[in-house]
Length: 99
Ligand code: SF4
Image 1 (cartoon, rainbow, N blue to C red):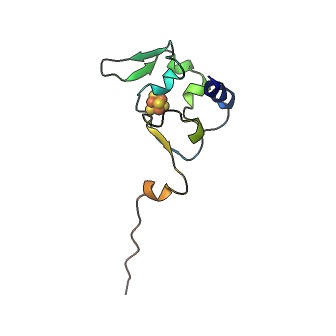
Image 2: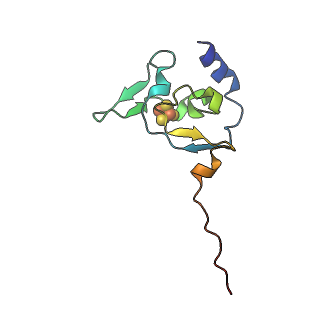
Image 3: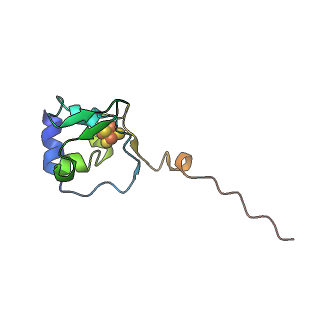
Protein backbone atom coordinates (compact mmCIF):
# COMPACT_ATOMS: atom_id res chain seq x y z
CA UNK A 1 0.00 0.00 0.00
CA UNK A 2 2.94 2.31 0.73
CA UNK A 3 4.20 1.75 -2.83
CA UNK A 4 0.81 2.69 -4.26
CA UNK A 5 0.81 5.89 -2.20
CA UNK A 6 4.33 6.67 -3.46
CA UNK A 7 3.25 6.10 -7.09
CA UNK A 8 0.24 8.34 -6.57
CA UNK A 9 2.25 11.21 -5.08
CA UNK A 10 5.04 11.04 -7.68
CA UNK A 11 2.76 10.51 -10.68
CA UNK A 12 2.86 14.17 -11.72
CA UNK A 13 6.63 13.95 -12.19
CA UNK A 14 7.95 13.04 -15.66
CA UNK A 15 8.71 9.51 -16.80
CA UNK A 16 12.41 8.63 -16.51
CA UNK A 17 14.02 9.26 -19.90
CA UNK A 18 15.90 5.97 -19.61
CA UNK A 19 12.71 3.93 -19.83
CA UNK A 20 12.55 1.60 -22.83
CA UNK A 21 10.18 -1.06 -24.11
CA UNK A 22 6.44 -1.11 -24.26
CA UNK A 23 3.42 -2.40 -22.41
CA UNK A 24 2.76 -6.06 -23.16
CA UNK A 25 -0.67 -5.89 -21.50
CA UNK A 26 0.19 -8.42 -18.82
CA UNK A 27 -1.95 -6.53 -16.31
CA UNK A 28 0.45 -7.08 -13.43
CA UNK A 29 0.61 -3.39 -12.51
CA UNK A 30 -3.19 -3.28 -12.34
CA UNK A 31 -3.12 -5.73 -9.43
CA UNK A 32 -0.98 -3.59 -7.13
CA UNK A 33 -1.69 -4.20 -4.33
CA UNK A 34 -5.05 -5.75 -5.31
CA UNK A 35 -6.84 -6.13 -8.67
CA UNK A 36 -8.29 -2.88 -9.97
CA UNK A 37 -12.08 -3.02 -10.49
CA UNK A 38 -11.57 -1.60 -14.00
CA UNK A 39 -9.13 -4.34 -15.05
CA UNK A 40 -10.40 -6.59 -17.83
CA UNK A 41 -8.88 -9.55 -19.70
CA UNK A 42 -9.78 -10.68 -23.20
CA UNK A 43 -9.97 -14.28 -24.48
CA UNK A 44 -6.22 -14.28 -25.09
CA UNK A 45 -5.40 -13.15 -21.56
CA UNK A 46 -4.43 -9.61 -22.56
CA UNK A 47 -5.41 -6.93 -20.10
CA UNK A 48 -7.27 -3.73 -20.80
CA UNK A 49 -8.62 -0.90 -18.71
CA UNK A 50 -12.35 -0.13 -18.69
CA UNK A 51 -11.56 3.55 -18.03
CA UNK A 52 -8.40 3.72 -20.18
CA UNK A 53 -8.96 7.25 -21.53
CA UNK A 54 -9.50 8.74 -18.08
CA UNK A 55 -7.11 6.55 -16.07
CA UNK A 56 -5.06 8.40 -13.45
CA UNK A 57 -1.45 9.48 -14.06
CA UNK A 58 -0.13 6.79 -11.72
CA UNK A 59 -1.52 4.16 -14.14
CA UNK A 60 -0.78 6.16 -17.29
CA UNK A 61 2.92 6.55 -16.41
CA UNK A 62 3.63 3.14 -14.85
CA UNK A 63 6.46 2.29 -14.45
CA UNK A 64 7.64 5.90 -14.16
CA UNK A 65 11.07 5.05 -12.73
CA UNK A 66 13.09 1.89 -12.14
CA UNK A 67 12.54 2.13 -8.39
CA UNK A 68 8.77 2.31 -8.94
CA UNK A 69 8.73 -0.71 -11.25
CA UNK A 70 7.32 -3.36 -8.94
CA UNK A 71 6.53 -5.82 -11.74
CA UNK A 72 9.95 -6.22 -13.37
CA UNK A 73 9.40 -9.95 -13.95
CA UNK A 74 6.36 -9.39 -16.18
CA UNK A 75 6.58 -5.80 -17.39
CA UNK A 76 7.52 -5.00 -20.97
CA UNK A 77 9.18 -1.77 -19.88
CA UNK A 78 12.72 -1.65 -18.54
CA UNK A 79 15.26 1.03 -17.66
CA UNK A 80 18.70 1.42 -19.12
CA UNK A 81 21.62 2.40 -16.94
CA UNK A 82 25.21 3.28 -17.70
CA UNK A 83 26.06 -0.38 -16.96
CA UNK A 84 23.53 -1.97 -19.33
CA UNK A 85 23.44 0.75 -22.00
CA UNK A 86 26.04 -1.17 -24.05
CA UNK A 87 23.73 -4.19 -24.18
CA UNK A 88 20.67 -2.25 -25.39
CA UNK A 89 22.21 -0.36 -28.30
CA UNK A 90 23.45 -1.98 -31.51
CA UNK A 91 27.19 -2.17 -31.65
CA UNK A 92 28.78 0.12 -34.21
CA UNK A 93 31.52 -1.46 -36.23
CA UNK A 94 34.62 0.68 -36.61
CA UNK A 95 34.72 2.52 -39.95
CA UNK A 96 36.72 0.74 -42.62
CA UNK A 97 40.15 2.20 -43.16
CA UNK A 98 39.96 4.06 -46.50
CA UNK A 99 43.65 3.37 -47.30
S1 SF4 B 1 3.15 -4.37 -15.74
FE1 SF4 B 1 4.06 -3.25 -17.47
S2 SF4 B 1 3.63 -4.54 -19.28
FE2 SF4 B 1 2.25 -5.21 -17.62
S3 SF4 B 1 0.35 -4.04 -17.95
FE3 SF4 B 1 1.63 -2.88 -16.50
S4 SF4 B 1 2.81 -1.43 -17.78
FE4 SF4 B 1 1.97 -3.01 -19.13
